[in-house]
Length: 563
Ligand code: GLC
Image 1 (cartoon, rainbow, N blue to C red):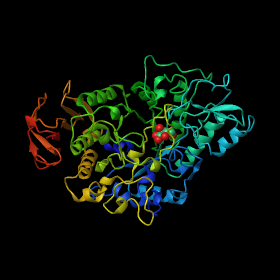
Image 2 (image 1 turned 135 degrees about the horizontal axis):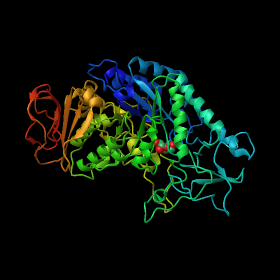
Image 3 (image 1 turned 60 degrees about the vertical axis):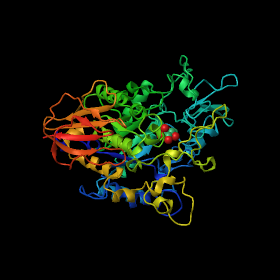
Image 4 (image 1 turned 180 degrees about the vertical axis):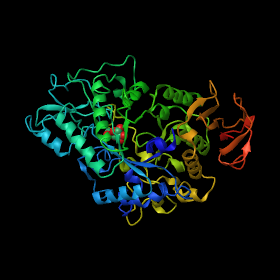
């Protein structure tokens, strides 16, 4: 296939924006759509040779619909409105226009497993047993003064909440403020499909379906079986979610959503398939005929420990299982999990986060699949773990029954660090308190400083993005691993019939390493390299022809193209 016949998302890199903390244009401390518009040039100014742009191809916005913000937008109260916090529909149209002018696609988060309990549909549904929306949510009688069955909420406690007006319980996969829709009801389906068309008509290029393996529930509401000898601290994980996740009917729903997208040209359907899922469950979301999600987010790669053997196994498993004609998708971070540098620094010998960050960047942008970046990852932002509880914004997760303080997700959602001015250039003005506090390392870790430094992580990402864009092998060449049991390093090839690219990453933090790989060593062009913890010095000038070295330095990274 040639570059032209591939779709934008098979070529492209997606960048996730958390709108609440990306850029605040009006100084109220909260991010907004105009803020995003002002920062579009940083993401991609439309010039492939730009000195300042990252060069990504699409932005995915965490939810911007009207919401009481109990779960920070993942609780929608009006699907056809923009939350006033972020701006107006006019601002949104402007964002689409400005993004498209620069060649950036726009993907929205679509949260339709559940709504907010403030949504008019739920307000009506809960009001009586016989109103027109009575059957839009999952209502059941209790069982002997107890909830109808043993289904739990992912955020803690029973998944059922009693509603005195109806004398019945309603089900919620997440918090009680997020009642699950009844997808068996055809009116619900049609309404959601219309909402999808509403945004597609406005020029949206795709959706990320939130909790897309949770839509459909057992019609007999049977109890979930307990897992054998499982003692996870989130009780939710001690059950097999046989009867409220991943049901066969769920695939039917996703297929129908895909059909709505296919009424339009070139739109993308990504989905979050994570709750209690195995890789097989997630892969099933491509659909029997590649007719469900284009890209199902699977979490195994991100959750792998930072060891070459684990990472290679995850890559190989994905290579084996991804159906013909479908494309894998990879990410390290998102708004629900700690950032990768914060995750790994404790669990590996790699104490040098800059070296880990560069290796992670190289991997993400050179494996076969669509890469998804999370805002700030390109400058090495880490979690801010010391946010005082009174400033926490993550209210949806319930305390555990033992009273244990839940793990909040705020740490990975702090304001984007643009520069070293107060509030890191995220916000300005009189309001001293951004939505979440800025990470104290912003004076050193910020976009402006890293753009000035040719050896910064940001410039390393920019170079990798550019390399990937110009190489068919890196875009969709076959992936062949060169080491059977990688212990300290990874080495793999990306190949098309005309091009061969070799990627080598030494994970070892102190030792040089003999590089023993079954491949001709002479005649490789150096595409990019890095070595020497922290220093990020390049072995040779990029573009020179070299032989594959016998030894790799500590943390050395090489990307070479066969001449
Ligand atoms: C998804 C979102 C998460 C949210 C939950 C409920 O997992 O990524 O942020 O809290 O769904 O909507």
